[in-house]
Image 1 (cartoon, rainbow, N blue to C red):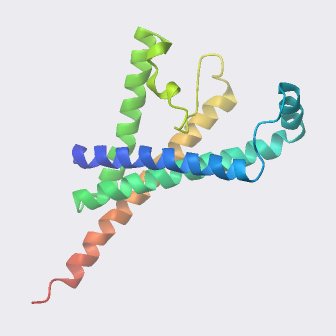
Image 2 (image 1 turned 90 degrees about the horizontal axis):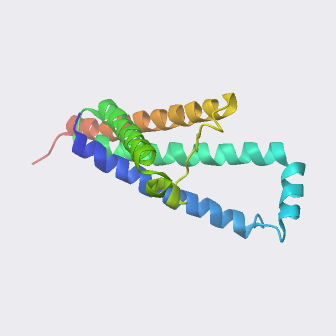
Length: 172
């Protein structure tokens, strides 16, 4: 594994996740999914469309995470040449390591040092002790599986480029 390539793949994944999240939020605002006038209106709208809103939101977050990590794995696979699957895994491992570091820093220093919570652009699955229910845990595992699959497939796609170049060879 080339950890430098994987780090830049992780940076690509995070940047694309922010951009895609902003794009989805803009599309939602354009089609009228803006916040209602009062808290009571919001509660009523959420109660009426709970299932549909949850499913659409879950699909949107899963797509954003998959596409972002696919791109991150692709970048790492292209940079590292022939170890695409390993590079995709390393991109995902960078995300896990960063998440663990942020959790440890937050646990030691307090919530004011939770860097990712201050950046609302990252699509995150917040799992706190209060929300660590079966549904919350399954959601976090689902997000981990989606990101891992995206990173591995992206790494393999990045590696395929070099395989095609070598197959064609260079003509003088």
